[in-house]
Amino acid sequence: MAPTLRSRARSRSSRNLYGVTTTAPDEQNSLSIGEVAARTGLSVHTLRLYEREGLLVGPVQRTSGGRRRYTGRDVDWLSICVKLRESGMPLADLKRFAELVRQGPGNEAERLQLLDTHRQRVDSQIKALEDCRTVITWKVGVYADHLARGEADGLWDPTNTERAVDRRVSGGLFGSRGRSQPAGAGGEADGVDAIAGLEFGDGGGEVVADCSVGEV
Image (cartoon, rainbow, N blue to C red):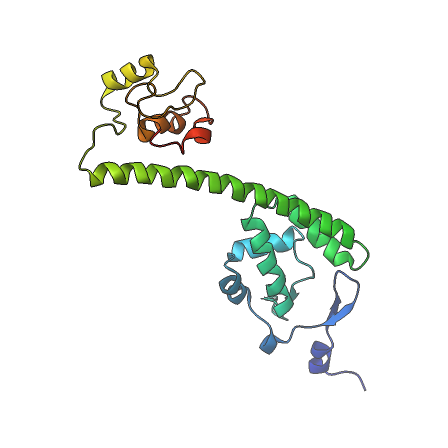
């Protein structure tokens, strides 16, 4: 007997990226694109982009009406993608990683190398941010100390151009090595004034190296 229209609909299938035949999605146990967006924090537009760019480890299934349906495995993979992208992994590297996963066993060494390279990149970013936090914490302390004493004198004042020029000429901001000096070593420069050069690209990034010394 020829199959009915309903039985044909139930038997609809497609081949995934592994060449394995899969049946139509179970809508009760799958998620819409909006639900996945809410779970992963990715926008609907980004989810569609990921699909177009081949960043998923399998094809996104669709209902008979053409609506995307995602599985729990899709959500788990997308959650990993979010962390990799948020930590700065280039899109090309993420695409390669997804490609390797889709290929299946046999390329684990290349996957490891790709992930370890990214880990080293993240470690460098963390170190740079820790250095930045040190400078910011020190600068907060300078301001807090001045305000606790009720003294604003000595804090960097962009409206006092005469004072700023005098300090630059006398070497109060930066010593002979082009770095900030402790208060009393070359004038009245304090930490906030010394770091002003860093904020505006004046004197180079080496100010950070010595900025933890007293109020320089």
